Image 1: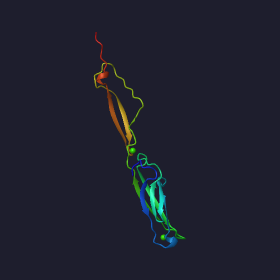
Image 2 (image 1 turned 90 degrees about the vertical axis):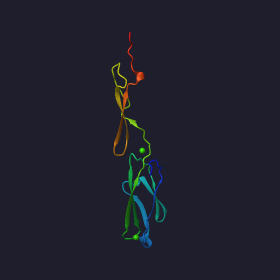
Image 3 (image 1 turned 120 degrees about the vertical axis):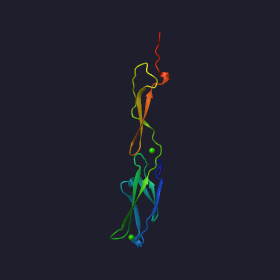
Image 4 (image 1 turned 45 degrees about the vertical axis):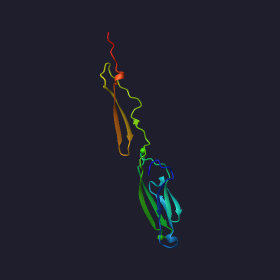
Length: 152
Ligand SMILES: [Ca+2]
Ligand SMILES: [Ca+2]
């Protein structure tokens, strides 16, 4: 689902049934695991649930979640438990602008340079989950700013 999905967005529908009679077949479910806090389980009917987001998503922070649903019956003295997990991939939204590696760049050159001389290199980058993408641009002397020597 896209990373700009608002809190409370629908993720999945699930149901859990237990064929036993009475309390032995009564089912309760909850989310478990490291990513449980990012989601909520909303009970719709006795054995039917919706999984919704409980936190803002940020693909650059967490590109993927593993959601574990744990269900248990009301059997006594031993409750039977089943766990099921699914993976949720967060889709990218263009929510970051390129960033320069420095606030200020300084270059120096002697006068009477030829047009197109490289003065300095400017780096900007953006972050992807597993790598840093670096782009460079050469700042060169433009024709209009070229120093013209005064003759005579
Ligand atoms: Ca049972
Ligand atoms: Ca993004």
